[in-house]
Image 1 (cartoon, rainbow, N blue to C red):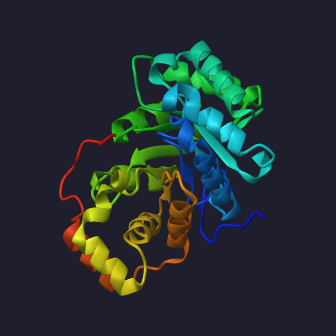
Image 2 (image 1 turned 90 degrees about the horizontal axis):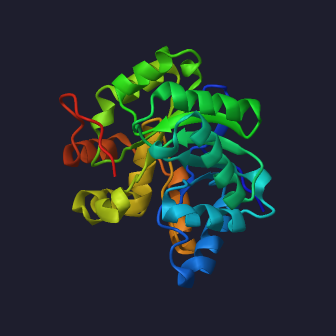
Length: 281
């Protein structure tokens, strides 16, 4: 049974999506884990984590194929996101890449299609491809990933570039550089921010302060790390390949971090004190 998420975030259009979704990096690459990964994705949707993010790069399409299988019969419950590789991101290549993603996903339309990171093709080329896909009703929204302030300013200055819906970036307690300028810029421009690797691929969970805050709140370190991202006004797409981890992630939606917890986290993970180049994984 589909359950509405308790927290949502608005796109520039005003449409609201689940603030806590599901990432799929590294999923679909091990046959022995396939059934468990499919069960995890389906459970996440049932629990309201209905933004499902993937990319043609992940496992050379294997993650998209896994998502397509997992979401069979549930497509209408999901806000589906994929990404075009920079090397494919000229006008015709963007369209062809999207069509390939749709085939693997067994879908007729993506809700959001992103440029994975900036490459050799001019942004005008990618934007033209996105426009063609919008007109063909193969995507509903378009956005970018791993673009910093200067790139975003260049993009939005292009004809039609101000329609960018999302910038998906590396953002978590240990990667706070975007707070200096990119997050404020996106808020001012009305661009939604989605945080990938919100628990730093599990590395954050080894930090004692995070564990101490979690114990005080009767939560898990994962839930605290994810709740912190959500409280910054960003969406988050943690990856999970098991139902138990999905349940753990979902607990972040209902967790409120009091001032004392936020202060302790700021002390352990200080915010930026100067401009920082955009980080990527």
